[in-house]
Length: 160
Length: 364
Length: 101
Ligand SMILES: Cc1cc2nc3c(=O)[nH]c(=O)nc-3n(C[C@H](O)[C@H](O)[C@H](O)COP(=O)(O)OP(=O)(O)OC[C@H]3O[C@@H](n4cnc5c(N)ncnc54)[C@H](O)[C@@H]3O)c2cc1C
Ligand code: SF4
Ligand code: SF4
Ligand code: FES
Image (tube, rainbow over all chains, first blue to last red; front, side):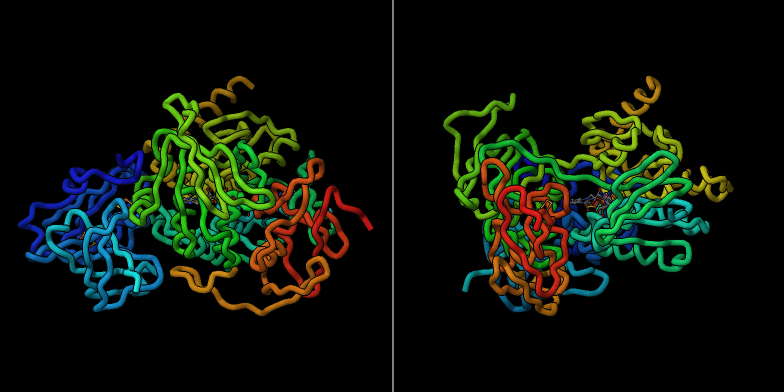
C-alpha cells in the first residue's frame, strides 16, 4: 500500500499510537515508516522523547512517558510526518502542521481529511499558531470526533 | 592571463562549501557561476530539508543557500565571485577560459574544483517536444524564483523525491496536480513526501507511464498507459488526462561536459546517473590538481553535496601543502557524516557507484 | 500569470519594465528572465524547431537545452530562460536557425 499509493494501512497507523489511556494527555504520533537519513525530530525534542540514535537512517521511536505533547517536533519535521493527538471522549484534539493558503482561523469549521485525501467529518479549528521558530509551517489545533482519531491527518477548507 | 590560487566552477552548495573550506585558510579562490544568483538548485527549494543538523536539516532550501553565502562574507578578501560567468573550457596547465558579458577571459591557477551539478534527463514519448512540457526544475524555477504560474493543471511524470516535492510546491502555489505517474511498481521517493501529497488528494499512479502528449501548438492533455511488472504496456489501459502543463521528473544526469573535454578519465555509472569522473578517495581526477564535488560526481542530495564541498576544499588545501591536525580531524568528521548519510537503503546506489569507481580506478 | 500569494515565499511586486515582443509592447518585472516575463504574459511558444518547424517552449530554464532560443535586439539564438529582461528589449519569435543581421 504505502509504497504504491502513499497511503499507510490502518494497522501501520495504529501502531504509532500509544494505548488509549495515555492519550488523555497530548502525545506525538510519528508516521515515518522508512529508513531515511533524517533526524530533526530527535534533535528538536527538548525532552529527549524521540530516539533515532547515531545512525540517522533509523526510524524514530517515541517514548510516550517522556513526551509532553509540546508540538515542537511537529513543525520541525521536514516530512510533515508528525502530529500530536489527545482524546477526551467524545472529542479528540489533534495538532497538525499546515503549509497552505488560506490559513484556517479560530472558530471556523473545516473538513477533516484522511490519509487518502477523503473527507471524513468536521474539524473545528481551535487555534492556529505561527512563530518564528516554526519557519512558516503553521500549527493548527483541531477538534474532531474521537472516533476519527486514527483517521484524520489534515484539513480542507469548506466551499462557501 | 589572470592568476588565482584555486578556481571553483559552479556556485551551488558544493561549490560554496568548497570555497568556504579554502578561504577560511587564507587561500585565494575565484568562483564562477553562470547564473545571476549563487546557490545552484537550492534557490528554488521552498521545502525544509532532510539530513541532520550539521547539514542544516529542517531549514528551507533557499535559506540554506542564503546561509552558505553569508558564511563566506567574512572572508571576502580571499574570495572573488564572478556571476553570469560561464566556464567554457579547462585546458592543460590549469588554464580555464570564461565567458562573461560577451567577453572572454583566460585564468590560470594551482587547483580547480568542478562542481557544476546536474541536468535533468528527458523522456521519450510521442510529442514530447510540445510546449507545455517542462523539466521539473524549470517548473520550480518559474514559480519559486520568478513567481510565475507554469500552468493551471499539471501532470507529474516521475515519483522520485523531486517529482513528489515539486508536486507539493505546485499545490502550494495554487496549481492543480491531476496525478503523479510512475512507471515502476513502487514510489521512488521518500514515502513521507508521497503521504503528504496523497492526503491532499493527489493520486499517485504506479505501473503507469506517459504514452503521448495531446495538442497541436500547445499541450492540452496527456495519454497515460499502464505497465505490467515487466514494464510492458498493457493495451486498452490508455487514459487521457487533460492538463495545460506536464512536468518531467525522471532523474538527473551529472554535468560532466567540462571534465570530459579536459580529458579526465570518465566512466558511465548508472548508479550515479550518467558519466562521472573516476576520482580518487580525495576527489581528485586523473587530471592532476582537478577535483570534483557534488552532483557532478554522482547524483545525491544537497546534504551530501554540502559535505563533499567542504571536504574537497580541505583536500585541495592538502594538495597545496597545507597540513594540520585540525584539517585532518575535520576531514574525519566530514567522512563520518557522509557515511551516515549514505548508509541507509536510499544510499545504496551511491555505495554501489563508489564501489564501481574503485574498481575502475584499479583498471586504469 | 503571476502568483499573487504564497504560504512560504514572500512575493514582492517588483518594478514594472516594458519590452517589445514582435513589435508589441509588453510588461515584465525587474529581475525576470525574458522567458519568465513572456510566460507571465501568456506567451509560451517561443520558437520553431530547425527542421520540422515544430513549436518550442522552454524546457530546462537553466540554459542547457536550447529550447528557448529567440532573437533579442537582433541577436539570434539567445537563451531567453537565463537572459535577464532589460527595459526596451526587442524580443522576437525565431524560426529555424535565426539570421545574423
Ligand atoms: C526539485 C529538487 C528537490 C530537491 N530536494 C532535496 C532535498 O530535499 N534534500 C536534499 O538534500 N537535496 C535535494 N535536492 C538535491 C540538491 O538540490 C542537489 O543535490 C544539490 O543542489 C547539488 O549541489 P551541487 O552544488 O552539486 O549542484 P547545483 O546545485 O546544481 O549547482 C551547480 C551550479 O553550477 C553552475 N554551473 C554549471 N555549469 C557551469 C559552468 N560551465 N560555468 C559556471 N557555472 C556553472 C550552475 O549554474 C549551478 O549554479 C533537490 C533537487 C531538486 C532539483
Ligand atoms: S511533542 Fe514535544 S515532547 Fe513530544 S516528542 Fe514532540 S518535541 Fe518531544
Ligand atoms: S524529522 Fe520527520 S521525516 Fe525526519 S526522521 Fe523525524 S519523523 Fe522522519
Ligand atoms: S529552456 Fe533550456 S536553454 Fe532555455
